[in-house]
Picture: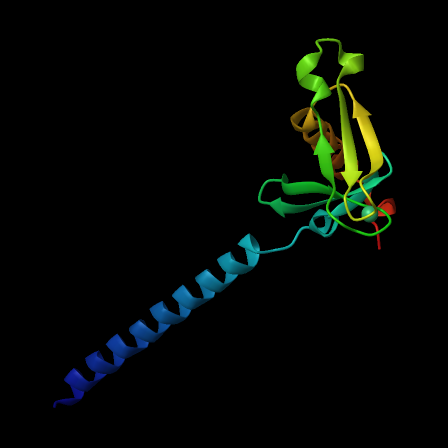
Length: 141
Ligand SMILES: [Zn+2]
């Protein structure tokens, strides 16, 4: 192998190393940017209507897996929104939240609509606090 050929082979290897290094660096930076945890993502529970609400965050401030829990025993609550189907009057549309573990006790009630409506208003309250940056005072420790 001539001296000239050796220089070209080394040059190719050097370029390959630079390209590989650059690729790894780019992927690492992108990974860090995409997986950066926003501060609001630590805000994952709040007390509304005397019951505890918990949820997870997806990208773009999307609230997922939102549900409510008993403030006394921490169990998942069940809800009864049967009255919403039988009435067209908003004041008569009531969703009851019941804790089976505490002996089928009513823990809360929300007037105005069924469980879909309730989840929608709770979601709006959560996002309002994130957008106003006021959630930090309300985070349940
Ligand atoms: Zn309970």
